[in-house]
Image: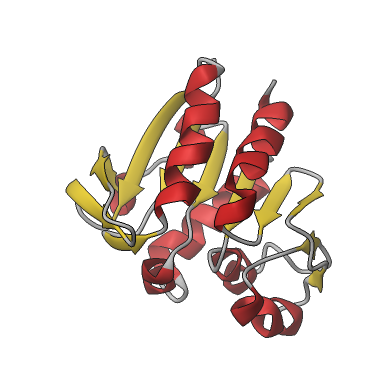
Length: 168
C-alpha cells in the first residue's frame, strides 16, 4: 500500500487541490497523511477544513512513497521555508513521486528540483519556474519522470490520477 504525504498551508489551502487527489488516493487504498506548520484544523480558501496529522518539522520522507504539495494562496508560506524545501529535495533525491499543484510548484522550483524538468503551475508562478530552470509547459498536468505538476483546481482530479498511476 502506497503512503502519501500531502503538505498544506495552515490557512488558505485550495480545497479541491487537497480533497480531490486525496479522494483518488484513498479510493485506491493508499494511506494519506496531511502535514502542515501546525497540527489541528487547517482552513481552506473555500471554507473546507482538514485535519492535520503531522507538523512538517517532524516529517521523515523515508516513511512515504510520494510527497504532494497542495496549492492555494496559503502555500506561499512554504516558498522560502527551509523545512518544506528540504522535504522536496529529499523526496526527489530518494526517487519518491513528487507532486505540486497551483502555486505550489514554486516550492519545488525554489528547492531546485525542477531544474531541467518539464513543469506547469498557476500562471502567476510561470516566471519563477522558468527563472529556476524549469521548462514551463502551460498544460493542465505535466509529468516529467516521477515529478507531477498541475495548474490549479480544474486539474486537481487528473493530478491525483497521474500520481496514483506512478505509485501503482
